[in-house]
Length: 484
Image (cartoon, rainbow, N blue to C red):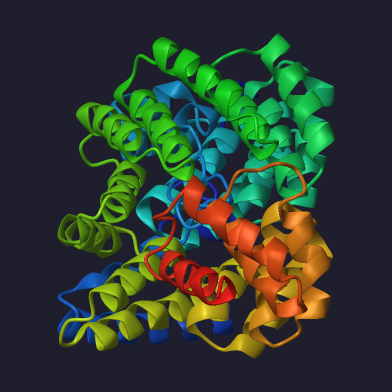
Protein backbone atom coordinates (compact mmCIF):
# COMPACT_ATOMS: atom_id res chain seq x y z
CA UNK A 1 0.00 0.00 0.00
CA UNK A 2 1.35 3.36 -0.98
CA UNK A 3 1.69 6.69 0.79
CA UNK A 4 3.22 8.03 3.95
CA UNK A 5 3.18 5.80 6.99
CA UNK A 6 3.65 8.38 9.73
CA UNK A 7 1.74 7.29 12.84
CA UNK A 8 -0.96 9.43 14.41
CA UNK A 9 -4.13 8.89 16.41
CA UNK A 10 -6.96 7.20 14.50
CA UNK A 11 -9.43 9.59 12.91
CA UNK A 12 -13.00 9.86 14.18
CA UNK A 13 -16.00 9.02 12.03
CA UNK A 14 -16.54 12.50 10.62
CA UNK A 15 -12.89 12.79 9.63
CA UNK A 16 -13.15 9.65 7.53
CA UNK A 17 -12.67 6.81 9.97
CA UNK A 18 -11.99 3.41 8.41
CA UNK A 19 -14.45 2.00 10.91
CA UNK A 20 -17.54 3.91 9.76
CA UNK A 21 -20.44 1.72 8.75
CA UNK A 22 -23.68 3.70 9.07
CA UNK A 23 -24.21 7.47 9.43
CA UNK A 24 -25.51 8.39 12.85
CA UNK A 25 -28.92 9.92 13.42
CA UNK A 26 -27.23 13.11 14.56
CA UNK A 27 -25.02 13.47 11.48
CA UNK A 28 -27.37 12.25 8.77
CA UNK A 29 -28.97 14.77 6.46
CA UNK A 30 -32.64 15.22 7.47
CA UNK A 31 -33.88 14.46 3.95
CA UNK A 32 -31.84 11.30 3.78
CA UNK A 33 -33.05 10.30 7.23
CA UNK A 34 -36.65 10.88 6.19
CA UNK A 35 -36.27 8.78 3.05
CA UNK A 36 -34.55 6.08 5.09
CA UNK A 37 -37.50 5.98 7.52
CA UNK A 38 -40.00 5.84 4.68
CA UNK A 39 -37.94 3.14 3.01
CA UNK A 40 -37.87 1.04 6.15
CA UNK A 41 -41.61 1.37 6.52
CA UNK A 42 -42.08 0.41 2.89
CA UNK A 43 -39.79 -2.56 3.39
CA UNK A 44 -41.86 -3.81 6.34
CA UNK A 45 -45.07 -3.39 4.34
CA UNK A 46 -43.80 -5.21 1.32
CA UNK A 47 -42.28 -7.95 3.43
CA UNK A 48 -45.78 -8.67 4.66
CA UNK A 49 -47.43 -8.21 1.27
CA UNK A 50 -44.87 -9.59 -1.16
CA UNK A 51 -42.92 -12.25 0.71
CA UNK A 52 -40.11 -10.02 1.86
CA UNK A 53 -38.95 -8.62 -1.47
CA UNK A 54 -38.84 -4.98 -0.45
CA UNK A 55 -36.90 -5.70 2.68
CA UNK A 56 -34.01 -5.61 0.28
CA UNK A 57 -35.09 -2.46 -1.54
CA UNK A 58 -31.92 -0.62 -0.62
CA UNK A 59 -30.07 -3.09 -2.84
CA UNK A 60 -31.56 -1.20 -5.74
CA UNK A 61 -28.85 1.44 -5.64
CA UNK A 62 -26.15 0.82 -8.22
CA UNK A 63 -22.78 2.24 -9.11
CA UNK A 64 -23.52 4.05 -12.37
CA UNK A 65 -24.58 3.13 -15.89
CA UNK A 66 -22.02 0.35 -16.13
CA UNK A 67 -22.34 -0.89 -12.57
CA UNK A 68 -23.24 -4.38 -11.42
CA UNK A 69 -26.86 -4.85 -12.26
CA UNK A 70 -27.37 -1.46 -13.81
CA UNK A 71 -28.95 -2.42 -17.06
CA UNK A 72 -29.38 -0.40 -20.19
CA UNK A 73 -32.19 -1.01 -22.64
CA UNK A 74 -34.24 -3.01 -20.20
CA UNK A 75 -31.48 -5.44 -19.44
CA UNK A 76 -29.06 -5.41 -22.33
CA UNK A 77 -26.21 -3.39 -20.89
CA UNK A 78 -22.71 -4.49 -20.27
CA UNK A 79 -21.95 -4.45 -16.56
CA UNK A 80 -18.84 -3.27 -14.83
CA UNK A 81 -16.02 -5.75 -14.42
CA UNK A 82 -14.94 -6.25 -10.87
CA UNK A 83 -11.37 -5.98 -12.04
CA UNK A 84 -11.98 -2.37 -13.04
CA UNK A 85 -13.20 -1.36 -9.62
CA UNK A 86 -11.10 -2.10 -6.54
CA UNK A 87 -7.76 -3.88 -6.51
CA UNK A 88 -7.71 -7.53 -7.65
CA UNK A 89 -6.55 -8.57 -4.20
CA UNK A 90 -9.73 -7.23 -2.63
CA UNK A 91 -11.95 -8.94 -5.16
CA UNK A 92 -10.23 -12.32 -5.16
CA UNK A 93 -12.73 -14.94 -4.14
CA UNK A 94 -15.40 -12.29 -3.77
CA UNK A 95 -13.98 -11.43 -0.33
CA UNK A 96 -14.56 -7.70 -0.50
CA UNK A 97 -15.74 -7.44 3.11
CA UNK A 98 -12.60 -9.14 4.39
CA UNK A 99 -10.47 -6.88 2.23
CA UNK A 100 -12.17 -3.79 3.66
CA UNK A 101 -11.58 -5.01 7.20
CA UNK A 102 -7.92 -5.54 6.38
CA UNK A 103 -7.57 -2.00 5.02
CA UNK A 104 -9.37 -0.59 8.05
CA UNK A 105 -7.00 -2.47 10.37
CA UNK A 106 -4.00 -1.18 8.42
CA UNK A 107 -5.26 2.40 8.60
CA UNK A 108 -5.70 2.23 12.34
CA UNK A 109 -1.95 1.80 12.56
CA UNK A 110 -0.99 3.90 9.54
CA UNK A 111 -3.65 6.63 9.29
CA UNK A 112 -1.58 8.82 6.95
CA UNK A 113 -1.36 6.19 4.22
CA UNK A 114 -3.16 8.14 1.49
CA UNK A 115 -3.08 5.24 -0.96
CA UNK A 116 -4.95 2.97 1.43
CA UNK A 117 -7.54 5.67 2.11
CA UNK A 118 -8.11 5.82 -1.67
CA UNK A 119 -8.39 2.03 -1.89
CA UNK A 120 -10.90 2.06 0.95
CA UNK A 121 -12.94 4.68 -0.90
CA UNK A 122 -13.02 2.52 -4.01
CA UNK A 123 -14.01 -0.45 -1.89
CA UNK A 124 -16.91 1.49 -0.40
CA UNK A 125 -18.11 2.39 -3.90
CA UNK A 126 -17.93 -1.29 -4.78
CA UNK A 127 -19.77 -2.21 -1.61
CA UNK A 128 -22.52 0.32 -2.33
CA UNK A 129 -23.27 -1.32 -5.63
CA UNK A 130 -22.88 -4.96 -4.59
CA UNK A 131 -24.31 -4.83 -1.07
CA UNK A 132 -27.03 -2.25 -1.54
CA UNK A 133 -25.67 0.06 1.15
CA UNK A 134 -26.19 3.63 -0.11
CA UNK A 135 -24.52 5.15 2.94
CA UNK A 136 -21.28 3.84 1.50
CA UNK A 137 -21.33 6.57 -1.15
CA UNK A 138 -21.07 9.25 1.52
CA UNK A 139 -18.38 7.22 3.29
CA UNK A 140 -16.48 6.82 0.03
CA UNK A 141 -16.58 10.58 -0.44
CA UNK A 142 -15.25 11.08 3.11
CA UNK A 143 -12.32 8.71 2.80
CA UNK A 144 -11.40 9.83 -0.69
CA UNK A 145 -11.36 13.42 0.57
CA UNK A 146 -9.05 12.21 3.34
CA UNK A 147 -6.72 10.67 0.76
CA UNK A 148 -6.66 13.88 -1.26
CA UNK A 149 -6.04 15.97 1.85
CA UNK A 150 -3.04 13.84 2.80
CA UNK A 151 -1.64 13.88 -0.74
CA UNK A 152 -3.29 16.42 -3.06
CA UNK A 153 -3.88 15.14 -6.61
CA UNK A 154 -2.60 11.64 -5.82
CA UNK A 155 -3.32 9.14 -8.57
CA UNK A 156 -5.25 6.63 -6.46
CA UNK A 157 -7.49 9.30 -4.95
CA UNK A 158 -8.29 10.85 -8.32
CA UNK A 159 -9.17 7.44 -9.77
CA UNK A 160 -11.42 6.82 -6.80
CA UNK A 161 -13.19 10.15 -7.28
CA UNK A 162 -13.78 9.24 -10.93
CA UNK A 163 -15.37 5.96 -9.87
CA UNK A 164 -17.55 7.67 -7.27
CA UNK A 165 -18.71 10.33 -9.74
CA UNK A 166 -19.68 7.63 -12.24
CA UNK A 167 -21.48 5.74 -9.49
CA UNK A 168 -23.63 8.81 -8.90
CA UNK A 169 -24.14 9.33 -12.65
CA UNK A 170 -22.11 12.54 -12.65
CA UNK A 171 -20.27 11.73 -15.86
CA UNK A 172 -18.76 15.17 -16.39
CA UNK A 173 -16.94 14.90 -13.08
CA UNK A 174 -16.06 11.27 -13.82
CA UNK A 175 -14.36 12.39 -17.02
CA UNK A 176 -12.61 15.28 -15.29
CA UNK A 177 -11.18 13.06 -12.57
CA UNK A 178 -10.22 10.34 -15.05
CA UNK A 179 -8.30 12.88 -17.12
CA UNK A 180 -6.54 14.19 -14.04
CA UNK A 181 -5.59 10.64 -13.09
CA UNK A 182 -4.14 9.99 -16.54
CA UNK A 183 -2.04 13.12 -16.24
CA UNK A 184 -0.41 11.40 -13.27
CA UNK A 185 -0.21 7.97 -14.91
CA UNK A 186 -1.21 7.50 -18.58
CA UNK A 187 -1.39 3.73 -18.02
CA UNK A 188 -3.80 3.67 -15.09
CA UNK A 189 -6.26 0.95 -16.12
CA UNK A 190 -9.07 2.18 -13.90
CA UNK A 191 -8.83 5.72 -15.24
CA UNK A 192 -8.60 4.55 -18.85
CA UNK A 193 -11.78 2.51 -18.33
CA UNK A 194 -13.55 5.31 -16.49
CA UNK A 195 -12.73 7.70 -19.30
CA UNK A 196 -14.35 5.43 -21.89
CA UNK A 197 -17.42 5.03 -19.68
CA UNK A 198 -17.79 8.76 -19.14
CA UNK A 199 -17.46 9.61 -22.83
CA UNK A 200 -20.01 6.93 -23.75
CA UNK A 201 -22.47 8.16 -21.14
CA UNK A 202 -22.02 11.75 -22.30
CA UNK A 203 -22.84 10.70 -25.86
CA UNK A 204 -19.40 11.60 -27.18
CA UNK A 205 -19.09 8.41 -29.16
CA UNK A 206 -16.29 9.39 -31.55
CA UNK A 207 -14.13 10.36 -28.59
CA UNK A 208 -15.14 7.20 -26.75
CA UNK A 209 -14.01 5.11 -29.71
CA UNK A 210 -10.62 6.83 -29.74
CA UNK A 211 -10.36 6.42 -25.98
CA UNK A 212 -11.10 2.70 -26.32
CA UNK A 213 -8.41 2.33 -28.99
CA UNK A 214 -5.91 4.14 -26.79
CA UNK A 215 -6.80 2.07 -23.73
CA UNK A 216 -6.44 -1.12 -25.78
CA UNK A 217 -2.95 -0.04 -26.79
CA UNK A 218 -1.90 0.89 -23.27
CA UNK A 219 -3.61 -1.64 -21.02
CA UNK A 220 -5.28 -4.47 -22.93
CA UNK A 221 -7.32 -6.68 -20.65
CA UNK A 222 -10.86 -7.55 -19.61
CA UNK A 223 -11.91 -4.08 -18.33
CA UNK A 224 -10.79 -2.46 -21.58
CA UNK A 225 -11.96 -5.28 -23.88
CA UNK A 226 -15.54 -5.11 -22.60
CA UNK A 227 -15.74 -1.36 -23.02
CA UNK A 228 -14.15 -1.58 -26.48
CA UNK A 229 -16.85 -4.09 -27.41
CA UNK A 230 -19.67 -1.87 -26.20
CA UNK A 231 -18.39 1.12 -28.17
CA UNK A 232 -18.53 -1.04 -31.30
CA UNK A 233 -22.00 -2.35 -30.43
CA UNK A 234 -23.28 1.22 -30.16
CA UNK A 235 -22.19 1.74 -33.77
CA UNK A 236 -23.96 -1.42 -34.93
CA UNK A 237 -20.76 -3.44 -35.29
CA UNK A 238 -22.04 -6.51 -33.46
CA UNK A 239 -19.53 -8.85 -35.12
CA UNK A 240 -16.54 -6.97 -33.73
CA UNK A 241 -18.20 -6.63 -30.33
CA UNK A 242 -18.72 -10.37 -30.05
CA UNK A 243 -15.21 -11.15 -31.31
CA UNK A 244 -13.69 -8.87 -28.70
CA UNK A 245 -15.84 -10.30 -25.92
CA UNK A 246 -14.89 -13.85 -26.91
CA UNK A 247 -11.27 -12.75 -26.74
CA UNK A 248 -11.90 -11.31 -23.30
CA UNK A 249 -13.53 -14.54 -22.15
CA UNK A 250 -10.55 -16.55 -23.37
CA UNK A 251 -8.31 -14.51 -21.08
CA UNK A 252 -10.61 -14.60 -18.04
CA UNK A 253 -9.37 -16.78 -15.20
CA UNK A 254 -11.37 -15.83 -12.09
CA UNK A 255 -15.02 -16.89 -11.64
CA UNK A 256 -16.03 -13.23 -11.37
CA UNK A 257 -14.44 -12.25 -14.68
CA UNK A 258 -15.75 -15.35 -16.45
CA UNK A 259 -19.29 -14.66 -15.22
CA UNK A 260 -19.03 -10.99 -16.15
CA UNK A 261 -17.78 -11.48 -19.71
CA UNK A 262 -20.06 -14.44 -20.46
CA UNK A 263 -23.01 -12.33 -19.28
CA UNK A 264 -21.96 -9.51 -21.59
CA UNK A 265 -21.92 -12.02 -24.45
CA UNK A 266 -25.39 -13.21 -23.45
CA UNK A 267 -26.74 -9.67 -23.40
CA UNK A 268 -25.26 -9.00 -26.82
CA UNK A 269 -26.90 -12.14 -28.24
CA UNK A 270 -30.25 -11.37 -26.59
CA UNK A 271 -30.24 -7.88 -28.05
CA UNK A 272 -29.95 -9.45 -31.50
CA UNK A 273 -32.78 -11.91 -30.87
CA UNK A 274 -30.45 -14.93 -30.70
CA UNK A 275 -31.99 -16.49 -27.62
CA UNK A 276 -30.36 -19.91 -27.89
CA UNK A 277 -26.90 -18.33 -27.93
CA UNK A 278 -27.88 -15.99 -25.13
CA UNK A 279 -29.04 -18.88 -22.94
CA UNK A 280 -25.79 -20.73 -23.67
CA UNK A 281 -23.75 -17.68 -22.69
CA UNK A 282 -25.74 -17.19 -19.49
CA UNK A 283 -25.20 -20.85 -18.68
CA UNK A 284 -21.44 -20.28 -19.04
CA UNK A 285 -21.69 -17.34 -16.67
CA UNK A 286 -23.69 -19.26 -14.09
CA UNK A 287 -21.37 -22.24 -14.30
CA UNK A 288 -18.65 -19.91 -13.07
CA UNK A 289 -20.84 -18.19 -10.46
CA UNK A 290 -24.37 -19.49 -9.94
CA UNK A 291 -25.30 -16.45 -7.86
CA UNK A 292 -24.30 -13.82 -10.43
CA UNK A 293 -27.38 -11.61 -10.61
CA UNK A 294 -26.88 -10.03 -14.07
CA UNK A 295 -26.68 -13.54 -15.55
CA UNK A 296 -29.77 -14.65 -13.64
CA UNK A 297 -31.65 -11.58 -14.88
CA UNK A 298 -30.45 -12.03 -18.43
CA UNK A 299 -31.44 -15.70 -18.41
CA UNK A 300 -34.94 -14.78 -17.21
CA UNK A 301 -35.32 -12.26 -20.04
CA UNK A 302 -34.13 -14.82 -22.60
CA UNK A 303 -36.52 -17.41 -21.18
CA UNK A 304 -39.40 -14.95 -21.49
CA UNK A 305 -38.47 -14.14 -25.07
CA UNK A 306 -38.23 -17.85 -25.85
CA UNK A 307 -41.76 -18.43 -24.56
CA UNK A 308 -40.93 -19.98 -21.18
CA UNK A 309 -42.89 -17.45 -19.15
CA UNK A 310 -43.12 -19.58 -16.00
CA UNK A 311 -39.35 -19.97 -15.75
CA UNK A 312 -38.87 -16.30 -16.57
CA UNK A 313 -41.21 -15.14 -13.79
CA UNK A 314 -39.63 -17.49 -11.27
CA UNK A 315 -36.16 -16.31 -12.24
CA UNK A 316 -37.02 -12.60 -12.20
CA UNK A 317 -38.77 -12.95 -8.84
CA UNK A 318 -35.55 -14.37 -7.44
CA UNK A 319 -33.58 -11.45 -8.90
CA UNK A 320 -35.77 -8.69 -7.50
CA UNK A 321 -35.93 -10.44 -4.12
CA UNK A 322 -32.18 -9.87 -3.88
CA UNK A 323 -31.64 -6.82 -6.06
CA UNK A 324 -34.80 -4.80 -6.83
CA UNK A 325 -33.56 -2.35 -9.44
CA UNK A 326 -35.83 -0.44 -11.84
CA UNK A 327 -35.01 -2.65 -14.83
CA UNK A 328 -35.85 -5.98 -13.19
CA UNK A 329 -38.83 -4.49 -11.33
CA UNK A 330 -40.37 -3.21 -14.57
CA UNK A 331 -39.58 -6.47 -16.37
CA UNK A 332 -41.28 -8.53 -13.65
CA UNK A 333 -44.27 -6.21 -13.62
CA UNK A 334 -44.66 -6.60 -17.38
CA UNK A 335 -44.36 -10.37 -17.09
CA UNK A 336 -47.20 -10.35 -14.58
CA UNK A 337 -49.29 -8.13 -16.84
CA UNK A 338 -48.59 -10.36 -19.81
CA UNK A 339 -49.62 -13.48 -17.87
CA UNK A 340 -52.80 -11.86 -16.62
CA UNK A 341 -53.69 -14.38 -13.92
CA UNK A 342 -55.75 -13.52 -10.87
CA UNK A 343 -53.86 -10.99 -8.78
CA UNK A 344 -51.25 -10.30 -11.46
CA UNK A 345 -52.43 -6.73 -12.07
CA UNK A 346 -51.89 -5.91 -8.40
CA UNK A 347 -48.52 -7.66 -8.41
CA UNK A 348 -47.44 -5.63 -11.42
CA UNK A 349 -48.56 -2.40 -9.74
CA UNK A 350 -46.44 -3.30 -6.72
CA UNK A 351 -43.34 -3.66 -8.87
CA UNK A 352 -43.87 -0.28 -10.51
CA UNK A 353 -44.46 1.39 -7.14
CA UNK A 354 -41.11 0.13 -5.92
CA UNK A 355 -39.39 1.95 -8.78
CA UNK A 356 -40.56 5.22 -7.22
CA UNK A 357 -39.15 4.16 -3.87
CA UNK A 358 -35.85 3.27 -5.53
CA UNK A 359 -35.75 6.69 -7.18
CA UNK A 360 -36.24 8.45 -3.86
CA UNK A 361 -33.48 6.43 -2.24
CA UNK A 362 -31.12 7.00 -5.13
CA UNK A 363 -31.61 10.75 -5.14
CA UNK A 364 -31.27 10.98 -1.37
CA UNK A 365 -27.85 9.39 -1.70
CA UNK A 366 -26.59 11.66 -4.44
CA UNK A 367 -27.41 9.47 -7.43
CA UNK A 368 -28.99 11.05 -10.50
CA UNK A 369 -31.99 8.85 -11.33
CA UNK A 370 -33.70 10.90 -14.04
CA UNK A 371 -33.12 8.38 -16.84
CA UNK A 372 -34.53 5.54 -14.74
CA UNK A 373 -37.52 7.72 -13.83
CA UNK A 374 -38.18 8.68 -17.44
CA UNK A 375 -38.01 5.13 -18.73
CA UNK A 376 -40.23 3.59 -16.04
CA UNK A 377 -42.75 6.39 -15.62
CA UNK A 378 -43.47 6.79 -19.33
CA UNK A 379 -45.17 3.39 -19.48
CA UNK A 380 -45.97 2.64 -15.85
CA UNK A 381 -46.16 5.88 -13.90
CA UNK A 382 -46.87 9.58 -14.13
CA UNK A 383 -46.38 10.70 -17.72
CA UNK A 384 -45.72 14.33 -16.83
CA UNK A 385 -42.99 13.20 -14.41
CA UNK A 386 -41.50 11.06 -17.14
CA UNK A 387 -41.23 14.06 -19.45
CA UNK A 388 -39.71 16.30 -16.78
CA UNK A 389 -37.12 13.68 -15.96
CA UNK A 390 -36.32 13.00 -19.61
CA UNK A 391 -35.87 16.70 -20.33
CA UNK A 392 -33.59 17.07 -17.30
CA UNK A 393 -31.45 14.15 -18.39
CA UNK A 394 -31.26 15.40 -21.97
CA UNK A 395 -30.01 18.75 -20.66
CA UNK A 396 -27.09 16.89 -19.05
CA UNK A 397 -26.09 14.52 -21.84
CA UNK A 398 -27.04 13.60 -25.38
CA UNK A 399 -26.84 9.83 -25.78
CA UNK A 400 -28.89 7.37 -27.80
CA UNK A 401 -30.51 6.30 -24.53
CA UNK A 402 -31.48 9.80 -23.43
CA UNK A 403 -32.73 10.58 -26.94
CA UNK A 404 -34.92 7.48 -26.89
CA UNK A 405 -36.21 8.25 -23.40
CA UNK A 406 -37.08 11.84 -24.33
CA UNK A 407 -38.75 10.77 -27.58
CA UNK A 408 -40.93 8.22 -25.80
CA UNK A 409 -41.80 10.59 -22.95
CA UNK A 410 -42.89 13.20 -25.50
CA UNK A 411 -44.93 10.57 -27.34
CA UNK A 412 -46.86 9.36 -24.29
CA UNK A 413 -47.62 13.01 -23.57
CA UNK A 414 -49.10 13.42 -27.07
CA UNK A 415 -46.26 15.50 -28.52
CA UNK A 416 -45.19 13.35 -31.45
CA UNK A 417 -43.97 16.14 -33.73
CA UNK A 418 -41.52 17.16 -31.01
CA UNK A 419 -40.63 13.51 -30.35
CA UNK A 420 -39.69 12.67 -33.93
CA UNK A 421 -36.18 14.21 -34.14
CA UNK A 422 -35.20 12.60 -30.84
CA UNK A 423 -36.51 9.20 -31.93
CA UNK A 424 -34.48 9.49 -35.12
CA UNK A 425 -31.39 10.53 -33.19
CA UNK A 426 -31.73 7.47 -30.96
CA UNK A 427 -31.30 5.20 -34.00
CA UNK A 428 -28.76 7.33 -35.87
CA UNK A 429 -25.56 5.57 -34.74
CA UNK A 430 -26.61 2.18 -36.12
CA UNK A 431 -27.15 0.72 -32.66
CA UNK A 432 -29.27 -2.39 -33.14
CA UNK A 433 -31.91 -2.08 -30.43
CA UNK A 434 -35.45 -3.35 -30.93
CA UNK A 435 -36.93 -1.09 -28.26
CA UNK A 436 -35.52 2.00 -29.96
CA UNK A 437 -36.88 0.83 -33.33
CA UNK A 438 -40.29 0.15 -31.78
CA UNK A 439 -40.43 3.58 -30.15
CA UNK A 440 -39.43 5.34 -33.33
CA UNK A 441 -41.90 3.28 -35.37
CA UNK A 442 -44.78 4.28 -33.11
CA UNK A 443 -43.71 7.94 -33.23
CA UNK A 444 -43.39 7.87 -37.03
CA UNK A 445 -46.91 6.45 -37.31
CA UNK A 446 -48.31 9.06 -34.94
CA UNK A 447 -46.51 11.82 -36.83
CA UNK A 448 -48.11 10.70 -40.10
CA UNK A 449 -45.47 8.57 -41.89
CA UNK A 450 -47.23 5.21 -42.08
CA UNK A 451 -44.72 3.63 -44.44
CA UNK A 452 -41.71 4.43 -42.29
CA UNK A 453 -43.58 3.44 -39.15
CA UNK A 454 -44.50 0.02 -40.54
CA UNK A 455 -40.93 -0.55 -41.70
CA UNK A 456 -39.47 0.28 -38.29
CA UNK A 457 -41.97 -1.86 -36.38
CA UNK A 458 -41.23 -4.77 -38.69
CA UNK A 459 -37.49 -4.26 -38.16
CA UNK A 460 -37.93 -4.23 -34.38
CA UNK A 461 -39.84 -7.49 -34.38
CA UNK A 462 -37.45 -9.12 -36.82
CA UNK A 463 -34.41 -8.11 -34.80
CA UNK A 464 -35.67 -9.14 -31.37
CA UNK A 465 -39.29 -10.35 -31.36
CA UNK A 466 -39.29 -10.79 -27.58
CA UNK A 467 -37.63 -7.49 -26.64
CA UNK A 468 -40.38 -6.70 -24.11
CA UNK A 469 -43.42 -8.71 -22.96
CA UNK A 470 -45.70 -5.72 -23.45
CA UNK A 471 -43.74 -3.68 -25.98
CA UNK A 472 -43.48 -6.52 -28.47
CA UNK A 473 -47.21 -7.19 -28.14
CA UNK A 474 -47.99 -3.52 -28.77
CA UNK A 475 -45.58 -3.46 -31.73
CA UNK A 476 -47.36 -6.41 -33.35
CA UNK A 477 -50.75 -4.80 -32.73
CA UNK A 478 -49.68 -1.44 -34.15
CA UNK A 479 -48.09 -3.06 -37.20
CA UNK A 480 -51.24 -5.04 -37.92
CA UNK A 481 -53.44 -1.96 -37.65
CA UNK A 482 -51.11 0.15 -39.78
CA UNK A 483 -51.05 -2.52 -42.51
CA UNK A 484 -54.81 -2.55 -43.04
